[in-house]
Image (cartoon, rainbow over all chains, first blue to last red; front, side, top):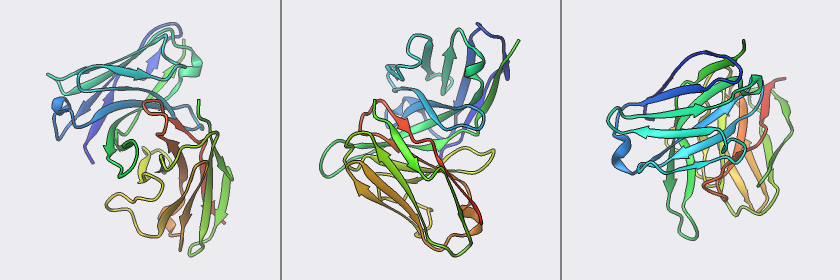
Length: 127
Length: 108
């Protein structure tokens, strides 16, 4: 487990931008060994993958968020960040950052999973 | 998009029971299936990866099986600390990932 710590405003007004950062301890995020993701959980609901950032800064996003999300990496601060624009009440929830790890398979593609998670940051969208 | 469906949505058990949770994918995903355990107010924890592999520190009473579209998570001899919500997640369509809606295991 690598300590991950999310931080950011707990209250965001509708139509504004949600901004969170995730501080990664215990290793450099620029090493290239891992990638880093954001996953959210609306109150009382399940998990939803938002996107992943790779050590070089390239990204993959859930199509449901692609038009309004930016995930980036700051290697100098060993942080990853999430920006979600034009938020509505439906964006209320706990936002987790997580480390994505892969294991090579004997046959086929590597398997990817999220093996370290932050404690989560609750964001409420309300005026 | 690959949809993941878990059943049942809720399951009651007693300490010492053997329980089986099911996850079904909307298309074949080989063995690219992971399981997570989440306790109230806590972050999810990786429980099983690649269908049946246990990360270090996960008790051997947890086991996973399946291939293609149908997968199971079995807990033999349920312990008090096992009452939680369990999520499956496919990584076949990497870099796109989807989770199931979860199965809540509670005390009978």
